[in-house]
Image (cartoon, rainbow, N blue to C red; front, side):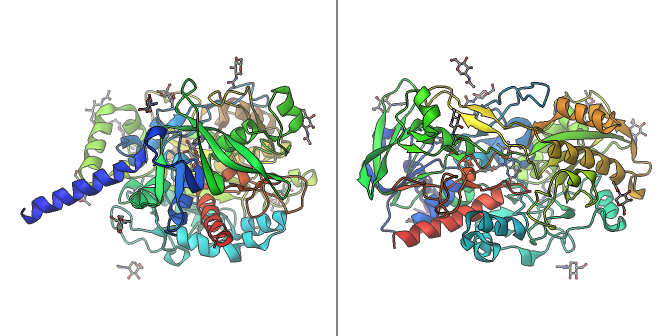
Length: 598
Ligand SMILES: Cc1cc2nc3c(=O)[nH]c(=O)nc-3n(C[C@H](O)[C@H](O)[C@H](O)COP(=O)(O)OP(=O)(O)OC[C@H]3O[C@@H](n4cnc5c(N)ncnc54)[C@H](O)[C@@H]3O)c2cc1C
Ligand SMILES: *[C@@H]1O[C@H](CO)[C@@H](O)[C@H](O)[C@H]1NC(C)=O
Ligand SMILES: *[C@@H]1O[C@H](CO)[C@@H](O)[C@H](O)[C@H]1NC(C)=O
Ligand SMILES: *[C@@H]1O[C@H](CO)[C@@H](O)[C@H](O)[C@H]1NC(C)=O
Ligand SMILES: *[C@@H]1O[C@H](CO)[C@@H](O)[C@H](O)[C@H]1NC(C)=O
Ligand SMILES: *[C@@H]1O[C@H](CO)[C@@H](O)[C@H](O)[C@H]1NC(C)=O
Ligand SMILES: *[C@@H]1O[C@H](CO)[C@@H](O)[C@H](O)[C@H]1NC(C)=O
Ligand SMILES: *[C@@H]1O[C@H](CO)[C@@H](O)[C@H](O)[C@H]1NC(C)=O
Ligand SMILES: *[C@@H]1O[C@H](CO)[C@@H](O)[C@H](O)[C@H]1NC(C)=O
Ligand SMILES: *[C@@H]1O[C@H](CO)[C@@H](O)[C@H](O)[C@H]1NC(C)=O
Ligand SMILES: *[C@@H]1O[C@H](CO)[C@@H](O)[C@H](O)[C@H]1NC(C)=O
C-alpha cells in the first residue's frame, strides 16, 4: 500500500471507529450497568463525558434524545445559526404559555436536541461574567468552592483564544492574558462590519457613560467591546466538537443518541434516602422502555427544561402538585421547576445611509449563495462570523429613580443591568416583525440581563414525550420594565454621538417610535422575545437549607446517587451569556465527582 492510500485507509478506519461508538438504539448497548450514567449530551453533559472518562477505570454511558451534530451545515456555519437553527430538526420545539405581561403572546422557546445540546445551536456569544457573579453564588450557597478565586482554574481549563479568520493583528481588541488553554475555541470577528469603528469610537469618546472594555473575560463585565464567539477557523466550536467528539474512541465511553430518558427510578435506600440508580428510556412514546443502572451516580444534564421535567416524572418535586397528577412522590422538593429566570430581548432599529449592511445578504439569495460558496471553499468571509461584531453591557445610572423602590439586583458594580448586541442589519434572531423589503438598518438588540421576574415550569401530564408547561413570566417585575426603558434611552443617546452623524438617518420600528416611558413599555410588550437563557429551575442552595434542589456539591437533596450538572442549578442567572459559566461549572463538577470516587 502506498503512503497516501495508507493515510486514507487509516482516516477511514478512524472515522468508522468514531461512528461505531455512537449507538442509535438501546439494543446495541453491550451492557446494562455503568459507573456513571449521564442524561443529556449538551454543554454540561459533554464536558462530564470527557473529564470522567479521563479515568480509565470509570465506565460512562451518555444518553441523548437528539441526533448527531455531524454534517449539519447550519450548526457549523456561524452566520446561519440565528436564521436557521431555532425551531429546527435539531431543537426541542418548546413554546411558552401566553405571557401575561407581553400582551398574551406565546413565544417560541427552542433548546438544542442534538449532541452538544444548546451549545450546538446557540449564537456563540462568549462572556464568562464578572468575578462578582461567582462570589455571589458562593454567598448564596454558603460554599466558597464557587467563589471566583476557586473556579478561575476551571475557566482557564475550558477555553482558549484563537486568531480571527482574517488573521489580522488583534492588539487592542482583546486581552490574550484573560484567556486559557482549554478545548472550546474563542475568537473575535474575522471580518469587520460597517459599524464596528463607530461603536468603539463612540465608547472611547463618551467618557464614563459607555466605557470601553478590552476583554469580556477580564472579571469586569461592564463596557463596550468586540464580541467574542465560540468559534475557531470560521466554524462553530461546541461542547460536541470540543469535548465529546475527540474522546468518542475511548473504550470506557458509550454514547447513545436518539433515545429519550423518561425518568430515574429509585432502588432501595441508603442512610434513609432513596437511591436513584436506574435510568429509564425509550426511543419514542410508542416504543418499549428500557433501563440501565449506574453503580456510582446518575447525573442529570438535560438542561433547564429537561432536568426539572425528569425530576418531576421521577417523583421529585412539590408533592402536593405531583399527587394531583397521580405521581408517587419520593422526595418533596417544591423548588423543582420554580424560580425560572431568563433574559428578555427586543430590537430597537435605526435607518442608516449605507449600502454595506447585512440587509441585502439577508434578503437576497444570490448574495447569500456567493457567501456560502466562499465559506465552503475556506471557511472565510461574512458567514464565518456571527451576525454581530460588538456588544455592550451597561448599568443604569446610580441615581435612576427605580432604585428608590428596588434594591440593585446585580452582583456588584462590575455587573451590568442591560446589554446591547449591535448588528449592521435589521437585527437577527430577535425580530417579531418581518424584514422590510428595502432599506438599510442598524439594530440594537436590547437585553435585560438583571431581571427580577421569576417564572416556572410544570408538568402538563405524566407522558414524558409531552412538553412541560413553560412560563418564563417575562416583564413581570417593574424593575425589568425600568431597565428596558433606561436601555432604550441609552441606545438613542449612543447614536447621537459624533461617529454616527450622517450615518444614522432616523428611528425605525415600534420601539423607536415610542417616546414616553409608558409608550416604551407598551412597545416592549409587543416586541420582547427571549435570548434563550433559562436557568435556575433546580437551583442549588446551602447544604442544610430547606429550599433549593441540590446542595453545593450538586447532589439532589434527600436522594442518594443523583447529581445535577446543567444550567438548572444556577442559584441566580448571571448577567451575561451563560454557556461560559456552564463550562466552568461542568469542569468543576467533574473534579467534584472524580474526587468523591477517588
Ligand atoms: C437559540 C439559543 C441561543 C443561545 N445563544 C447563546 C449565546 O449566544 N451564548 C451563550 O452563552 N448562551 C446561549 N444560549 C444558552 C446556552 O446555549 C445554554 O445556556 C447552555 O447550552 C445550557 O447548557 P445545558 O447543559 O444546561 O443544556 P443544553 O446545552 O441545552 O443540553 C441539554 C441536553 O440534554 C438533552 N436532553 C434533554 N432532555 C432529555 C431527555 N429526557 N433524555 C435525553 N436527553 C435529554 C437535550 O437534547 C440536550 O442535548 C442560547 C440558547 C439557545 C437555545
Ligand atoms: C431497535 O432495535 C430493535 C432490535 O433490533 C428493533 O426491534 C427496534 O425497532 C429498534 N428501534 C428503533 C427505534 O429503531
Ligand atoms: C421543529 O419544528 C420544525 C419546524 O416546524 C420542524 O421542521 C422540526 O422537525 C421540528 N423538530 C423536531 C425535533 O420535531
Ligand atoms: C500588533 O500591533 C501592536 C500594536 O499596534 C504591535 O505592538 C505588535 O507588534 C503587533 N503584532 C504583530 C504580530 O505584528
Ligand atoms: C483517540 O483518538 C485520538 C485522536 O485521534 C488519539 O490521540 C487517542 O490516542 C485515541 N484514544 C484511544 C483510546 O484510542
Ligand atoms: C406546592 O404546590 C401547591 C399547589 O400546587 C402550592 O399551594 C404550594 O405552595 C407549593 N408548595 C411550596 C412549598 O411551594
Ligand atoms: C446606495 O445605493 C443607492 C442605489 O444604488 C445609491 O443611490 C446611494 O447613493 C448609495 N448610498 C451610499 C451611502 O453609497
Ligand atoms: C440580488 O443580488 C444580485 C447580486 O448583487 C443582484 O444582481 C440582484 O439584482 C439582486 N436581486 C434582487 C431581487 O435585488
Ligand atoms: C478564501 O477564499 C476567498 C475566495 O473564495 C478568497 O478571496 C480569500 O482570500 C480566501 N481566504 C483565505 C484565508 O484563504
Ligand atoms: C442623575 O445624575 C446625572 C449626572 O449627575 C444628572 O444629569 C441626571 O439628571 C440625574 N438624574 C436623575 C433622575 O436625578
Ligand atoms: C397540555 O395538555 C392539553 C390536553 O392534552 C393540551 O391541549 C395542551 O396543548 C398541552 N399543553 C402543552 C404546553 O403541551
